[in-house]
Length: 71
Image (cartoon, rainbow, N blue to C red):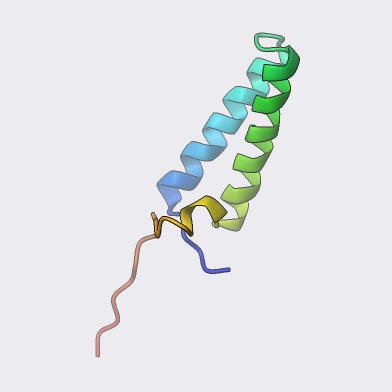
């Protein structure tokens, strides 16, 4: 897997996941919507740690900075 997520993208996903987790465990959101958002939060954390988002592949998106080689 080639990394396709930059630092800002990863940080925002973790912050959103934390906010969703807090909202779920304080019963601000509950029921089916709460479970769906909790699962989304887990996916956000996993993709952040892997620095890879499979949904970016079909669209050719990459938020990762590219280092240029001096030759």
